[in-house]
Length: 317
Image (cartoon, rainbow, N blue to C red; front, side):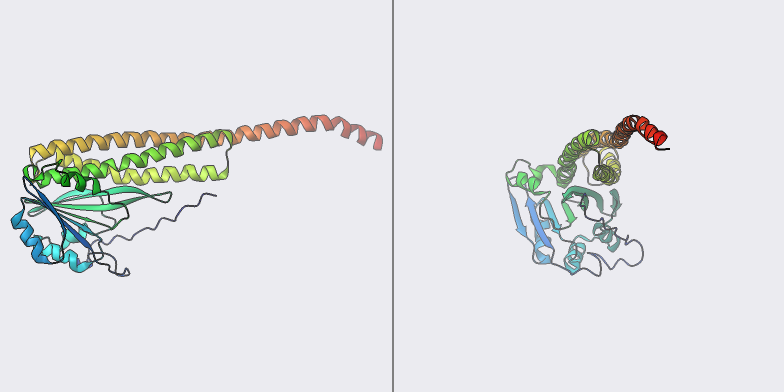
């Protein structure tokens, strides 16, 4: 049998009081990690934030500031970010809601961009929420603490000064991070291609109940990815085509490039979905062929033994 983890459905935490930011009431609060990356035209500096004053000093010192918040259960740390950057309670709730749908929304002097990163947890597809607050010369990202850092490549690129954020601005950093999110879907879909090839071979040559279960699992995972990517397409279209606060024309071209990559992923996903539907038909056809072969064998056996049965019955009378 195919052993898969059961998907846990989160209850939406919308409406009502906005006090419960940073996780559910049943979870044990663990300290968030606040990583600060400040850049100017020549240098960049990476550090861990321990006090609110460090955030205020960084805003004054650096032309571009990136605060990366890892871990969403630390209410005090999240409120500290909200106080320093004047982020409202409703906006913070959006940033820390596990089931937040991808969207772009303007909150006063900030732009909230919510997307989802894709990864495998065992053999189950998981999409993790990532929220970005784009403001005047700063970008704040909120995300869960994961074993693999999806933004590490962008951080290394900045440290090696292959991207001059001091000249390009926080909107360019936002485009780089969204590009990293979208690029993370490609290796996930590559694994889907391998799984579909294996299932096709099984469906044609050795169909079993386990094959049908795994075909269903693949189709379910593809729907999970589609639910995450389809609204992300609208987010990137808005950032790349529509006037948005703090987004320059130069950054808008990068958002349009991310949009093109998203459309490529959606096209690939649609082709995989059609292959999954075909696999189910192949599985059923293979079972029918097997049943027909069995019936042919039984017919031959019955044809051979029918005269003997008749003769035995006749003379037995």
